[in-house]
Length: 448
View 1 (cartoon, rainbow, N blue to C red):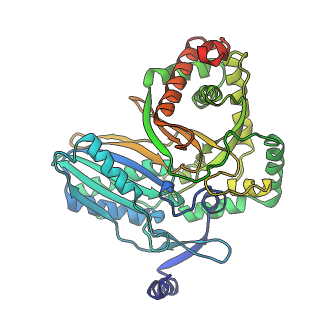
View 2: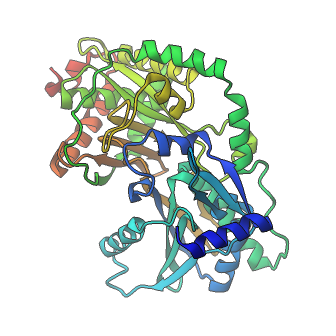
View 3: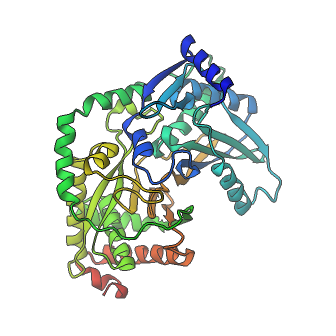
């Protein structure tokens, strides 16, 4: 750290402009149990916000400032510490919203996506902050796309929905000339972190760890570590909305959930791809059950291991029930992942997660589509900051479809192989919803 930066930080702390707080449990996972460094752009959470309607730049900037004042993570950075970093929250902060006009060529879908990827990949200064970037791209006077990227250390998928809701609420205030700021969040992010640290006492952590030591004993890994870690291959796809509706109906019929049903299909597809019937994958938990934290931007989510044990001669419905029971037990015994990894004695290696090779998620965070007489907005995910695994399948339910972000290690999956896995998943789920009492091996010829 430069001398000037040290002097500036000292001034902030002495004046009360900035306050220090311990890392939250989710943040500790990034520093202590991740296969990639915290500064790696793969930790960025990215989305596009499509806005239709006339916008006033002055109102946009003022609205963004209101959100920065409400949400402390937009004023948060990290200060290196002796044992682990500390959160540093500034009392004030200026919004960072950039505006760019696009040419007709740049406004085309492929060119816009390429530009967004460039913005997504730009690194952050973890000490100086801010740890977000917002660029409003003008395609026409009434057609805008906001490229929003935020570091996973201060955000999760839920955060994006909160951001959009806050931003548009603030913009409406600006349009109406309302001088008052946005109401404060019921629970700040650092207050949430303090409550979680108080909750997880040593005895409770030990009891949860005992469950996981038994559950994950001798769990096989799917793949060997990468010889040279490389950026994951990324592909966007979707499943028809009607397939999601059919999966939800099957779940209700068998006392399961949409998540368990999609997970059971994913497990079957992965078993076919790898030949493995026993493996561990990680699934996310939002940790937003308390209403007080639902309006809070911040990284609250965690990862929970699920041990997958498939029987190919068993009906899909029975595999579904087993999957559902395994996930219920996993969530019932969930604990902070950094503490779990430490209890198991597992440490990450470069390019290798300490416990699992695969992550599967059905995002249940709010994805607001805002529709007003003169203004509308749609949020669409582009990356969930989960490029810490060899394979990840991130599903987001929208009215139009089940959107999927596939992330895969390039030496394990070619583009064609990712597409094959996606088609296999769709075929399995379609067949399973049509005939849930059929054995897995009968749902697709390649599963025999």
